[in-house]
Length: 187
Image (cartoon, rainbow, N blue to C red; front, side, top):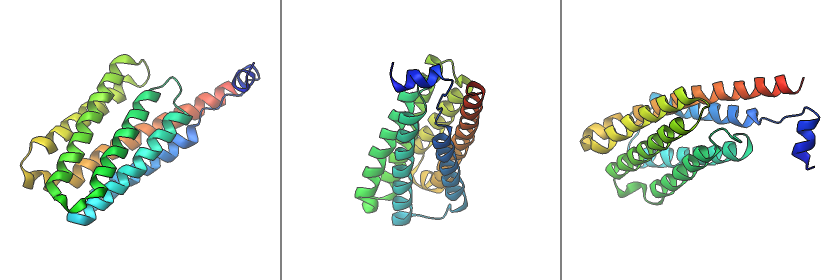
């Protein structure tokens, strides 16, 4: 019998809800930051979004590894890896042009949305939220990918902000649900 089996036997279940809540707070703050600074362009936008995606990717992977056993673990790991790849692309050459930044963020949102929709179809947990987030990210990513360069640049911060705010709300609700489950089981 390993440690996790002993913990279950003794009624001690670790849900890792604190990591998910920290992730939710960070994602929400990033969403607010993106919405309140829509004028940021060029290097500042590239660096801010690159660092944001780097942090988001790290937290997504940490949340997937630590607390989402059986609850879309692979999705958070894939979203985290995708965010890290996109962050590195954006940070390597932020002057390559604001349009490439719009395309990178659009591709990231579109692929993330498709992965979320697939997850929603395959899972029984949080299906409605995951489907909603998947459709929202797919629409927002598609908008960035297929809009004119001027339109994409104009709406980039708002689109990232909207996506991150909804994701933050979902993750906060998930964290509180995990906390409640941990309390119920550990009574």
